[in-house]
Image (cartoon, rainbow, N blue to C red):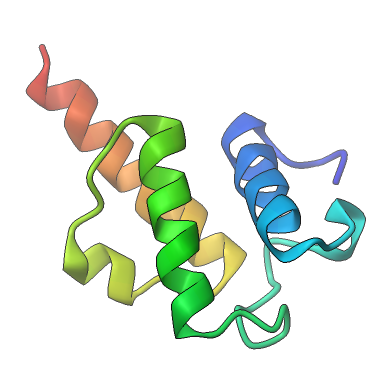
Length: 87
């Protein structure tokens, strides 16, 4: 987990907290299937990400989030778009 950037670490921490998993067991390549995240858990995580980062995640981005890496990439896009929209 030492190689993770701030956003990646936040995503891992949120998933670890919601699923009650040790953060060190979660990698960028962990899929939701690997972590035992079902569709209900996925929705709960989506709301947690939106609350944490004060964003709204579009459905098309949310549907692509099937691993920790995909989540961080999707969040980067949404956060980047928000930064561009506010300037």
